[in-house]
Picture 1 (cartoon, rainbow, N blue to C red):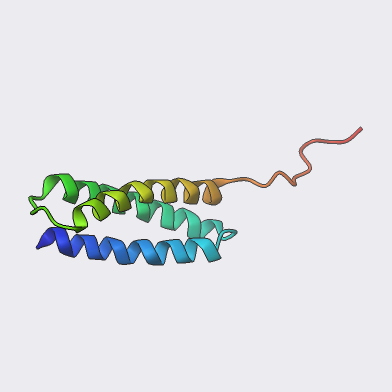
Picture 2 (picture 1 turned 180 degrees about the vertical axis):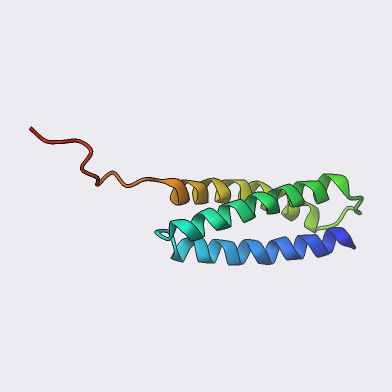
Length: 94
């Protein structure tokens, strides 16, 4: 029961996360916030997948796949959230 509930909560979060991430790539605060929330979702996802007993069901494969894809999404979000602009005038011209 817990396995299925957490799967659906994480699946809904995953969809919302990806949609907002895609449309707000230049919003660094949002990217950072979602990246850290994603880290929590990843930890919860792996804890539930490996720590909670569950029957063999069709969502097992989707659950672990979503956890691994979430790692890639979090990495992208950290990149967009913590990148710096190279348009600064720190390199003087001669």
